Amino acid sequence: MLPLTAAQWTRFRGPNGTGIADAQSIPGELRPDKNVAWKIALPSGFSSPVLTNTDVFLTASEETKLFTISVDRKTGKVNWKKEAPKPLGEKPKGPNSPVSPSPVTDGKNVYVFFDNFGLISYAADGRERWRYETGMLNLPYGAGTSPVLHESTVLLQIDQDSGSYLVALDKDTGKVRWKTERPHATHGFSSPVIYQPAKGGAEVIASGAYELDGYDLATGKKLWWVTGMAWQAKSVPVVAKDVVYVHSWMASLSELGHKEVTATWEQTLADHDKDKDGKIAQDESPDPTLTKIWFLYDLGKDGFLDAKDWEYLLARNHTKNGLYAIKLGGRGDVTKSHVLWRVEKGMPNIPSPLVYNDVLFLLREGGILTSFNPKDGSIHKQGRVEGAVDAYFASPVLADGKLITASREGKVAVIKPAAQWEVLSVGEFGEDIWATPAAADRQFFVRTQKTLYCFEAPRV
Image (tube, rainbow, N blue to C red; front, side):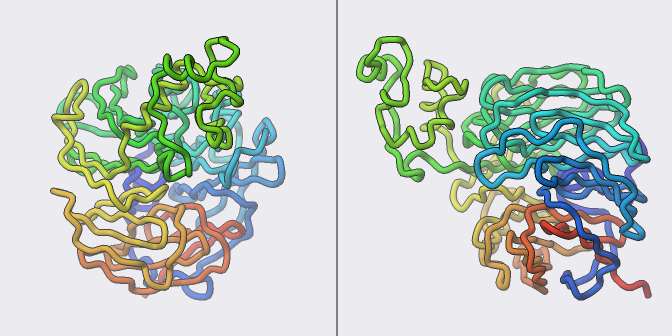
């Protein structure tokens, strides 16, 4: 892999998913009428741009077609646009986009993941290098995970309602180096990160349903895990020194308007299995309101609940939403020994945490930004990002000493990243923003649903 330079932002959320760019001279105001080096119209997509020294890579969709696009960083000219080999399949439930996963690059080649197809690698000139097909996936809301790259290995975390796995591929050939099953994981949207201890081999950290897991990068062997997480992982873990910070959130049954289920499988069969076939059909549901979201519990998508489905349903009673700080370096179940602290209230649904200058930032719906002490989880400050009170799908990023957030309605805020943070400016783009911004060197990129903006501070 080419060495990472200040001009590169190679994966979703930049270096190891931290959200922190090696950048300088980023404008203090980010708005469509100021400091714009160039902008281009693009098809829609939720994926974030990734950057090499010379190119911007991103994915997009037009009707049923899926594309990978290369853009010249200096001019904004489209270098090439390649259509994925298979068209978009059935539209997923909810607002998710078929091009939510972000690409990853080694500084030259690009690797893209499309739901219900798999991974494709393109050379810098747009020539297809190889493909790894996943086939149809059991993902009711569609995919959200992005591929990541460490040295010569491409990693892809496929958490679905049946048959979840983590796979490692050779970046030059696409051949499988190892594939590790994740039987505890149901559908999720998180992407893995890498932990490199002072001694020993690198580890892959994957956030999923109920667990955070660490794997040996060389072999795929599961090394350690922490249980008790929420049952739907969306955000990316953040490694800072020898601690990983991760949060997960999912509404409980009661918050979804349903009764909490506590009966055992045996009790449920005895009380509700009218035809005595050893399964629970929708018309046999102990709570008729569950049928409205039956797809969340029917993991095999066969129309029935079986013992495994029920086990997962009951497990949701014992999980907790929360932000965790976990000491790395353990082995086996480290839930009791390595969790340094946990905060359970005020968790975001999607945006990932960010740690900078011994302050941990977390952004949630309504534009509520909280700064924490990463040593003990105590709160320094919690308040609304005034001028950008909105829903948030993009994660915060940091560039040139500026914390930058982008709301769904297209309000981009520049914030002083301190324990007692303060909003410095807010720019309104007038278009939805779902993609997390990208930054490197002297450039900052904002992708709306219609446009890719490149900002650059004037040179003095």
